[in-house]
Length: 194
Image (tube, rainbow, N blue to C red; front, side, top):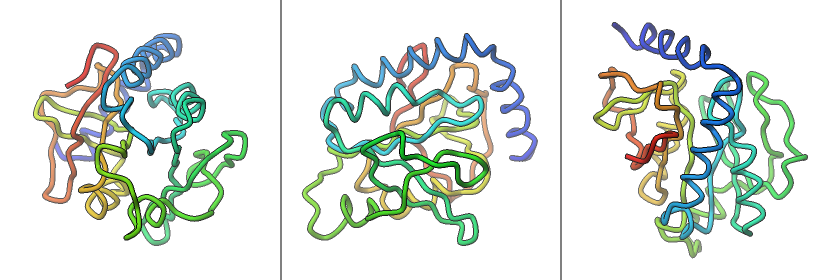
């Protein structure tokens, strides 16, 4: 199967999970993230505003702010194929953007604050929690096909720890990958961490 067919099948599986099951599984995934040593050490968290049947991140994002960590959420620029992360201090300021996904206001981008020449952040200080359509036992991630996360991580991946938040049901025996696909360093599901 090609990537588009795998993606369609994987989304059908995820979309087919009952809403209550997704909510409970999301809560368990967020708990695992919050209890992890790597999250506790992090000073900056790049997350996402969950959309449709993705792992729900509202609770995680609120907890990041409550703990006093810096929260950054993505804004997508479809015209240029780019994604940038901006700081968020109040989740109530998010507005619908690309494909109806809630996005932050455009302020000083994270690439200047976190990855700039004068940044005081080490790699272990910065964690990225990202969504995905599917993953496999080799640690590969399949996204939505736009390559936004892959391009961002190709540029800043050496200064950030990418973590995939997915439901266990999204695992496939093998997913097709290209040379540009970036693997997450960790995968967290409701059943555990890999």
